[in-house]
Length: 77
Image (tube, rainbow, N blue to C red; front, top):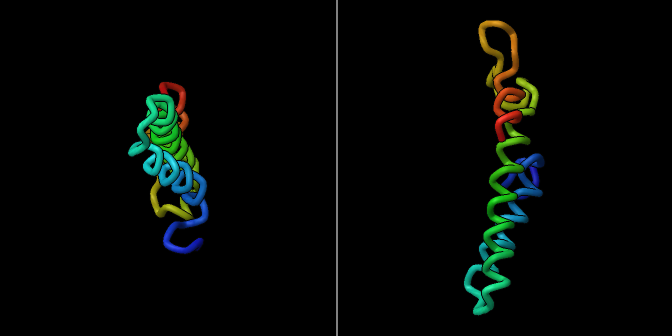
């Protein structure tokens, strides 16, 4: 573990923290960058979590046909 976050979440957490710190800035450009960072952090978190192995998450993302629901989700993302 990396502090309070698991290793796989460290990068997205850093993006999210920086985005949140920029939201209170007075510049419109910085607020737009903040929203992009928050969006990227959410996307990266979901993509990373859904592709982690079962031994890490304890969850099985395979449907009845054996297709990974994570891959199906990522195609639409």
